[in-house]
Image (cartoon, rainbow over all chains, first blue to last red; front, side, top):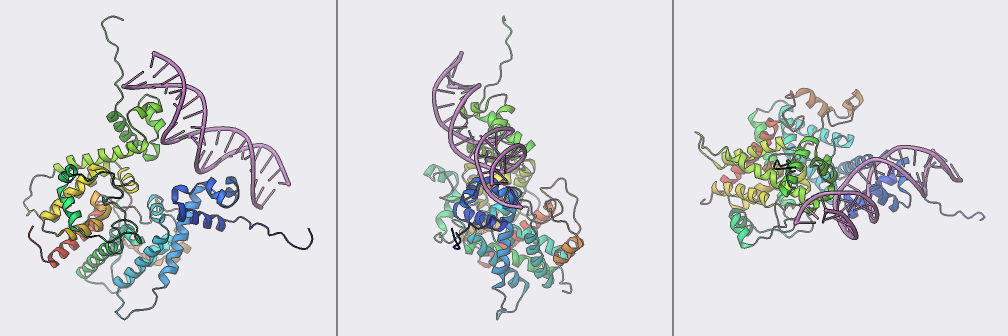
Length: 232
Length: 232
DNA sequence: ACCTGAACACCGTTCAAGT
DNA sequence: ACCTGAACACCGTTCAAGT
């Protein structure tokens, strides 16, 4: 073989491993992300991964880092000030809704964020930004602290899917069942739902998310006024 | 061996399997709940379990049922009316705080409730009770529906542990790190925390939970007034 | 230095066999 | 009918060996 180079395979790196892990999770879900399947996707043996990553937990932590890095770039798109006066509510709302747009691209983020220790530097940096936004709005540290807890996972752009619905409930809503849960049956009959598709789930569409978010933001603002806004 | 009976081993039943599974999860956590270890705790082989339960998922579903059954009995203790007028807020608040007391006894409930399909009849019945309470308070079905989403897991007595803290963060808060997250560092320095112990985690003590819950309940009540309370 | 095959200690679960 | 041992198809990971 003379001068012409054979296209050599890209060398395996931590970044390539994480990118492949992200793609695998995006396409087939977190359960499909095993060391053996990930290696296969990279055209390599499972044990090769351990030369670039200490173990599987490190891969999952890396995925969280990747997602939160996307939060930054996604949030930067909302940088231009609007015509409405920039309040802490407006800024925080935009930040959180930007985070949510990332989650809609990577459905595995909530499960990972919920079930892992809150360790990642990117997550802490994100929280720091949120604290900064509220501080700039004149909230006391005490109120900010309470508010972070109150926002919970909504701070990261998601809420859990815990409402019963026809897709995740294996309980047939037969007449006997309906009689046992008359209030729920009446509510389900009385509420018109958007069609699913571009949502995290059946009911958890943008409307529901923003309702809960605004409920909290409004309530926090009222607490801020009540405590007599200290100098920002 | 004449008349005296040897103490025969209790027959294995679904109820005994579930009770042992609950105890194992209570003591050693959900990860320790494997078919083999559960069988060992019952003095039996792993495969024997499959004669009383179709598979492991059925056991996990059964655990959720057990927990929600405890919600009922725990909630019944608050049945006596107080001197304060019984509002929907008061009733719902008591119901949710009762659920929370159950969770403090069974720390595995949140993880199980979050990661499983919302299928269990007991969960649906619980939700029906919540809907009934709000309906009795004059909330429209539409507002009730939004409110269930807004309450999220708080409806079941818990919120996620997502705040960074020294116990679940492996990031050392050295001066260089502190400089990167000045707002967070300032807040952590400025907030006095209760000692942990009888809580779900570091910051998620009763105070934080009730702060978020009341924020939501107050906000919902304001929405109810705003929409002009329909006849209950 | 990087990659690999065999192996280990676990899973949940199937199957054929025991009583 | 109820229980069991061996086995299967998976895991994450260790180790000794290749280049």
